[in-house]
Amino acid sequence: MKRFSCDEAVELTTAYLENALGPTARSRFESHLAACEGCERHLRQIKTTIGLLGGLTVEQSGQAGQSEQAEQHGPLGPHGAFPPDGDRLPTDMRARLLKAFRERRTSAEPRTPL
Amino acid sequence: MGTYLGEPPPDDVVVEALRAGDETVFAQLLDLWTPGMLRLARSYLSTRDSAEEVVQDTWLAVIGNIDGFQRRSSVKTWVYRILINTAKKRQARESRTIPWSSAFNGDQPEGAATDPSRFRRGTDLRSGGWKELPALWPTPEGEALAAEARDRLATALAGLPPRQRTVITLRDVEGHTSEEVCEILEISAANQRVLLHRARASVRGVMEDYFEAASRSI
Ligand SMILES: [Zn+2]
Image (cartoon, rainbow over all chains, first blue to last red; front, top):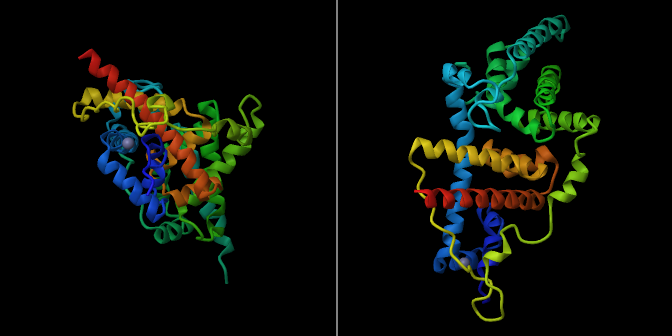
């Protein structure tokens, strides 16, 4: 059975993690990893990257709770593209949406089915 | 603030509550999902104002259409589909941004996602093997490292082509399943996987450079 080379194996990382490899490819991938430190590290780093990405929202939600800190950083915040304030709607917009939701209820009431 | 109250109730409860006009549940969904929706809208639109309006219009559409929701998908997938469609329409109106369809082409270059120069070339048995193993990464422990690493991640995401950014944001930042992402974006499973793979490979590359530079500076 043909072995995967490292450059072939790394291109299959996502398919492997998505469970999209057939049984043969999967077992070839796994036996390559068992014998190859470079690809094993590579896979671990991809998993670490996924973990770090998943932490972006968790940490942000935490920060949003610490309102004082979040407010001090101003509109751009300390984290560039994902500022703590950048993930909320302006207060007036949020209020308008809540109002629209309330009004939907009132306008829907007369049309209660028989 | 103080509005991030964890997981929303199950879908059946959510749908009934919204139809019955339960403002608490609506406010909870609004606060829980808006951050992710804003991030996603930003991957289609160049300004924060446009993204906010798209998110607002999405919620208005949700309010207006909840009675007609068919439950063929989860509520969240349904909301995200409205968001994507609203964002695409808005994007088409804003001439300076690249339309989704043409952005798509440049988004999927041919060839390997991982830099081919990392591997040996030749005809012997070692061909295709690592020239140099990827360096070990430190276990992120300290707060300082975490904050810096996050910064780098955000930059890496921002630098991705739009479709890759959308897919990796939905999957790895927001935690949608691959099935949900295919449904939201109306793409095939194979297509989703290719976009996700390229995006992850790029972000890993950025983090590798970052950890390498960090270890040299110690
Ligand atoms: Zn290998």
